Image (cartoon, rainbow, N blue to C red; front, side):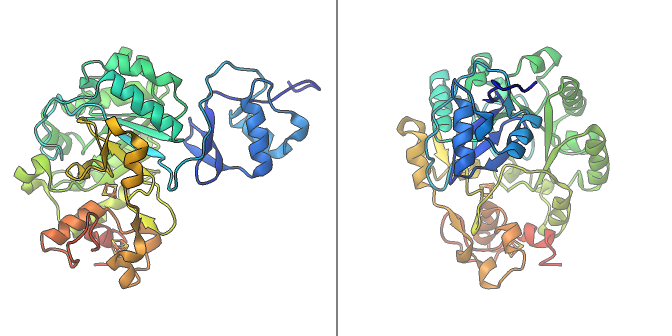
Length: 399
Ligand code: SF4
Ligand code: SF4
């Protein structure tokens, strides 16, 4: 209840971030609100020990923040990380491959057979600290299977102190109710590659029941849950059923993608699908996915990946072309990751009407098509210049 001496305080699920411009980040809902000068001054006050003065607040904005749980009227004891201007472009999303160990041997895994590498707790802590200082928003904890990290529980204990959204990306097989309740993450993302038949064709017998049990336990525990699905030759007819299932379960975010011919897929080419078939199925995905980009740029302008050997890359596909290593720091590597300018792509040359939506698709996939001679591009440069034909079919540019 508000009275004359009430003050506003930033809640534990909100953080002030200074990206290309100052923003208020809703960690729980993964929403970003740009702040003007007045808003910034007010939110800065709310982050301090004395709280924000309601008389200085834009009433509608303050009430909205209260209703969304971003501000409270009760002082809370929460660690506030430094708010420093980020680099430009800002590093907002980080894929952190804590280990390449895995309990499964999926036929489409882009990593290939695991090399049993993992990041130490000290290395993980230094990456998390640096990502937070760089004003990071969303951390995807991945593998291999991240639960196979030898000191996963210690890693899990590090997480609550950080003011960014943490997502654990798992095959679900090792999860149970107790483990789910102990996880210090904001979201669980499950790999589900079909209904039972399609999923097990690529992930192995018995894996579907495990992942669905884990997914339902996570929902019962009140966690945000998302799903990632790869299109392959054995799940083509199952997308309608998957869509009905995921919507009925209240899954908020479903990423659908097509695997590249890397790792295990090199020996399992029969599971690959051509662009016309795969592209049509991409339409099933919904939600935000991992790849927010910026005006005029593609390929996840704000995204980087740290691999289990400590290399830092544009994304895990670019393991052979690291931009740096964690011993030299995340910020140093990030300055070397060159943004993909859409005006340099063939997509721009022929004025693709979907360029601003599609943003040249997946640049790795497009460059692989070029190198295989199946694409029209010159085949040069890390990101290639050609089209991602899967996306061309998705957007109806090719029929
Ligand atoms: S290469 Fe593809 S997966 Fe990697 S960041 Fe670019 S668009 Fe994303
Ligand atoms: S739809 Fe095709 S041509 Fe258009 S931007 Fe995407 S990849 Fe490029």
